[in-house]
Amino acid sequence: MQEIESVLTEPLSRFSGNLLKSIDRNGKNVIISPLSIHMALNLVLMGSDEKSKTEDELIEALGYSKLRSSIDTVHGAYNKLSKAFREISEVAKREKLHKGEESEFGHVHTRMTKAPILETWCMAITKDTLLPNYSQYLQKYYNGSVATVERDNPAANQKLLDRVNNWGKEAGFSDDLLTQNDFADPVQVLLLSAVRVEAFWLEKFYEHEADIAFYNDGSLDKPVKKVKCLINSDFSGKFVEFVDSSVAKFKTHHKRIQDANSTQLLELSKHNFRAMDIPLSGDITYTIIEPLDQDKGNTLEKLTEALLSKDSTDNQILLFKALQLLDSDEARTNIARLQMPKFSFQTNLDLVPILQSAGISRIFGSDAELRKISGQGLYVDRARHDAVIEVNQVGLKAAGVTKMSIAPLMAHIDREPIRVEVQNPFLFVIRYGKLPLFIGQLTNLSK
Image 1: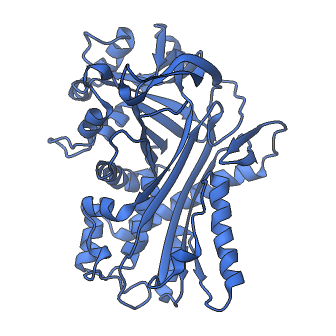
Image 2 (image 1 turned 60 degrees about the vertical axis):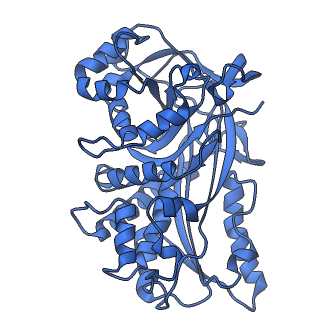
Image 3 (image 1 turned 90 degrees about the vertical axis):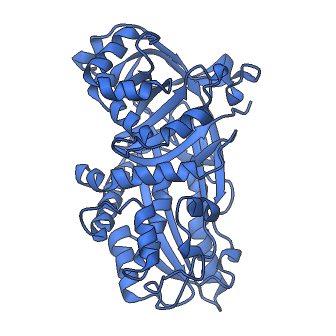
């Protein structure tokens, strides 16, 4: 995993930040998978002409301009990531299903095992023949498959649609991912990439009806009352207050982090926020980043803009510098009580203007140089992204886990009772190790 992270973490983090900045997020719940979009654009990159302006633009936007090795190293890292995910998911498939542990996701009942499900897949659906090299690279690096639309065989085409849409329903999407219109002229090739994660909390949460569960838009005038939220009354996680030491609520814990990471903490503390990692099975974490004093103008929008900016000294995005500090051993502590929202929502995006804003434009016009896909001059006609999330008492897209934890000795160093109630809009990141799989924000909680 360390080898994969060393290649992918920095470019994927930069891409994630640029992507989120390019989305209209004001007052909206948003979820995207930068990993899925990054993979799809890598498939386009594989089909771009060598040393062309299209290739140069994609290399820059995907975060590879400072890569010391060849682009094949990146494709190879994606191949290893896909294999690692398959091995993890195979454990889930082999385990016996637990009786009575059933949860509803997107109107589909799925009985889950203790192991998480981590999945990536890619597919090229074509009306024509792809170049042999492109097909081979798709399969070699991305475990991708190639399917052909048969003009005179509607039954076979419907079977292909059902295959993709059934996966979508299992993953929690409410609508079909593909329809016959997606194959309508002038489309010649359709590239698909997908990411899926389902995992349990390592320590159990309970549903609780809160008097006030959330403040929509961070406004005290918009409380969401008497709805179910999630409660954990004592668990070991990671927590950092990015504030000045004089106003830190949990001073002992804050001082321990400050002593070990003084420069980094001081730099980020002017933005006045807190962050916590909530661990799930399989090295997956759900990270909540919540601005403090939202009622005094420190809004999620303001914090997000600040954290998505780059540090002038090392050009790193501040959000991922904060995550590095959150990953430190000093951030680990006991949280005596955590209350956070239970929620689910779906995002559907037209990617064309978003990617153009993020610096990718040539692939969408007549200047596109994409002859390595089929040998023909091609361009990207449309690009869409759909993502869905559900956070409930058992995890992210998961149902039920029992775990006996023996806490490390350092978990007992700080007995300061840390109590956290997440009641205001927040940014969230779902990571596997250090890789951002999903990123988004929750601003409104439906009753």
